[in-house]
Image (cartoon, one colour):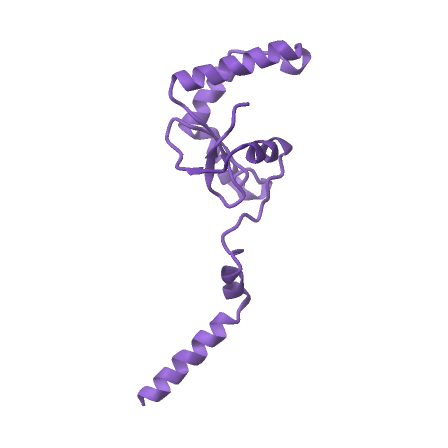
Length: 140
């Protein structure tokens, strides 16, 4: 009778191991993002970064590639209410107007001012990697 139980368990495990779900896990595809880094900006930042993973803190501003899909319902607004993102939005809010119309040197000065204020407040700017982790954005 123990042999029958062992045989049943072996057959069940073998069946499960051959399912598409198990094969995805074996090939490292199960927990990857279905939504790739669609933004050219995020692709550039991810390529500049050393991609050393970090854990987000409450005061960090976070740019996500996984929470911005139109089909996610209310979850796609999750980042709008993160405390670090709210603070970054308030800092950026001081610079009203169309920045693209400004000379490049002025745009760079504004960006450096924003980054300086974030750094002074011990806030990092994080970008989400393709596997869902977080890494510090390279400010250069």
